[in-house]
Amino acid sequence: MVEMDRIECLAGLGIKGDRFFDFKKDYKGQITFFSAEVYERLLTEFNLPKEEKPPSVFRRNVILSGVDLNEWIGVPFEIGGVRFQGTGECTPCYWMNEAVCPGAEEWLMGLGGLRAQILTDGILEVR
Image 1 (tube, helix red, strand yellow):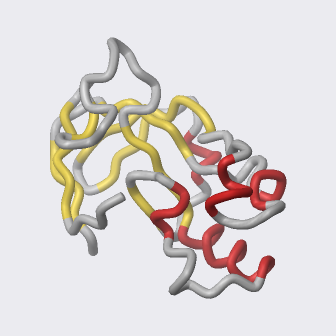
Image 2: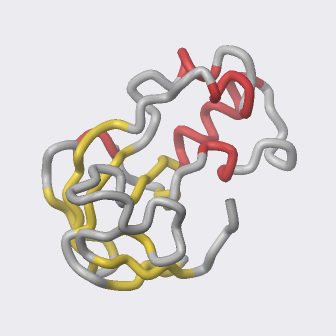
């Protein structure tokens, strides 16, 4: 994972330069989102230092704050002028127990983030 200040979203294809760019037609995970608040809660719950467990361990494309990502499942939404369609939760898997800590997979059930399709081209930038 590489932290970026900006990403180029291309409708129906994904994020330019991402490993899943143009992966397959109608791919439901063209972009993934994760909650900064969930990240902070998990660090606190498991007493994990930020320096050792940065947000990149979750392998999500965009970290957002101030939103309930589950409310965007099945609905269109817009961020920074780019339109998306929420397609489902990024269901946590066993890998979270290895990459984050034992118990992380279960703790993240229902909080794993959001998978979405990109509906319009545009740039997302860190603000």
